[in-house]
Image 1 (cartoon, rainbow, N blue to C red):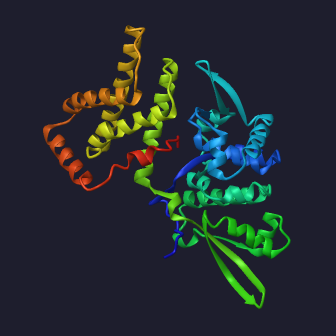
Image 2 (spheres, rainbow, N blue to C red; image 1 turned 90 degrees about the vertical axis):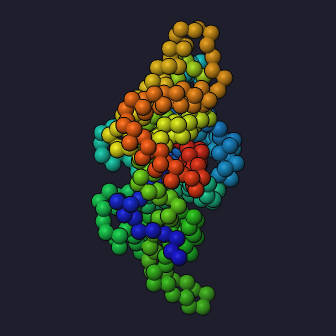
Image 3 (cartoon, rainbow, N blue to C red; image 1 turned 135 degrees about the horizontal axis):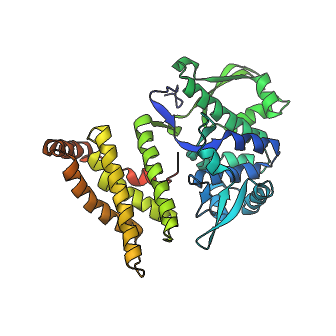
Length: 362
């Protein structure tokens, strides 16, 4: 079984976070160490739509990546020194913010970013690249992801969605003179890409590979329908975060995740089998009503506090969907929706917790 996949625009999207081309180019211009690139990637994976990181922990990332805390801390200081990240205060609490992220994220420029699969941060790639300060290896990996993005956007046929490099080209890109050194670096990328050796010859102790074919592994891709749901959830999640900041309600990433889980279970799942226009309107109305309800409570009762943000929103959304669902749908639509929901979910596990565990903007 081939662990790689030929990308097709109509079927798959890359499941990951945005890396803006402007950031990518400036990082290369600044000639930063591999530790800075690695820290920046972890920050991108946790940033909201404004580039704010609410619970960022270098010590946790040190454990996940297998890279020493001291090394990552040095990379963070490089990013601060070169104005890629800065510390800001929100409601008397300090947070990191990625500079220019909000402006770039709201840009109307088409394809001003490429996606980096979140799962690469669970691989051993950085544990192998960072200690040797192998910046070229990280840049080459990112360039491959960028090229796959271009392929998908142009909707080439499946047989063209393979990246082929000759050994000579790889030596140039990776700054390596010896073929053995190139093969060792390529081996590091095996967790990210399915790599096929083309024209391999073995003569005694000598190994010669003329070319390499790269395809993206299937676990880094997601069906477009699931991708659309995640986009929608991320959009509402960012609205929720900004709203809670505005009314000065203390919250953590877990609170946002709990609300989104409740939102999907109590609202989105119940209208998923209606037509798109009607379901979108109901989802929007329930969300807005829920926000207005909590704002009203805080304005009318100054001492009002919420013990569990997720539980509070779940109760509110459950009440609002009942009212709005009845007034916005016909009896026949409701019956069909309930039957479809039951048939679709009776034998399936609830995947929403998994899908939202690393909620991020798209």
